[in-house]
Structure formats: structure tokens, C-alpha cells
Amino acid sequence: MNFDIAYGEFGVRPPVTKPIPEFLIEVGEEGIRKLIDEHYEAIKTSDIAHLFPIDPQDLEKAKKHAADFFIQICGGPDYFNQSRGAPQMVGRHARFRIDAKARETWLTLYIPLLEKLKEDGVTETSLQSFWNYLNVFSLWMVNTQ
Ligand code: HEM
Image (cartoon, protein in one colour):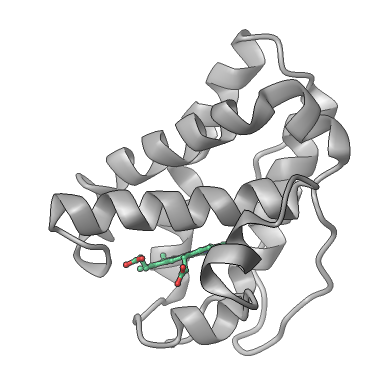
């Protein structure tokens, strides 16, 4: 697996490829919810913690919305559209100051979690595809220089 982080020019949104369907098939909806939960838990002690909700109830909501989105983008039911409406991810992130370093932290926190999924038997092809999606789409969320 290649968990290299791509760097782009500020304001440029490279084309994104969705994760392959095998990722959801192998990990399952509950597995994706667990992955997102662990990512948010890891964020709590990182240098991007200040961007995220402190209130436990708000944090649980944030986890649910994010997991709904990832299940949907991985080819599952459209939970996010049903509960939140059109994704409009760039717009939803606009009120947070996300710079290249914040994105790098956000992405890096996924690496040990994906490595753990590999140990659990998820194929490298699926994990690579999910990583590639995160790697490229997270560039879109960088809104601060
Ligand atoms: C692949 C890239 C990303 C995806 C798909 C993604 C997805 C999401 C989704 C679905 C939500 C919930 C939006 C809502 O329901 O209103 C969200 C919220 C949020 N995201 Fe991201 N995100 C990405 C990258 C990032 C990055 C790089 C950062 C910052 C380093 C970030 C910070 C946040 C914050 C602060 C929230 C608000 C949490 C809350 O209060 O609900 N995101 N993101």
C-alpha cells in the first residue's frame, strides 16, 4: 500500500475517483462507522482538535454525519442525502480554517486505522482505493493558505 500524501496547488481541485465497491463490501457499513469513530477519537488529541466539536453529543452527531457520507460515497445507501441534503462538501467545510497542515494531520490519522483493517483481512486494493479517494478529495477541503 502506498499511503503517500499528495500535495496540490492551493485552490486547485483535482478530479476525484470514488472508492471501489469492494471497499464497502469488505469493510461493511458497521466497519465504516467504526473507522470514522476511531478517526474522530484520534482527532481529539491531535493539532486539529480545535476545529471539531467538544460537546460529546455534538461529536457523536459529527461522527454519524461523516459515517453516513462515507457509506454513501462508497456505494451504500444515501444516508447522508436523506439526513443532511446535498453533500456540498466544500461549502460545508468553508466555515473551518483548513490549511495544508490541518489536512495533512487529518489524513495521517487514517493511516494506522487503514493498516489495522489490512490486518483484519481487508484487501490492499480496497484500502488503496479508499486512501486515494481521501488523499485527493481532502485537497478540495483546504481553504486557508
Ligand atoms: C476526503 C475529505 C473529507 C471528507 C469526505 C469529509 C467529510 C465530512 C462530512 C461528511 C462532514 C459532515 C458535514 C455535515 O453533515 O454538515 C464533515 C464535517 C467536518 N469536517 Fe470533513 N471531510 C473531509 C476532509 C476534512 C478535512 C481535511 C478537515 C480538516 C482538517 C475536515 C474537517 C471537518 C470539520 C471541522 C467538520 C465539522 C464537524 C461537525 O461539527 O460536524 N474535513 N466532513
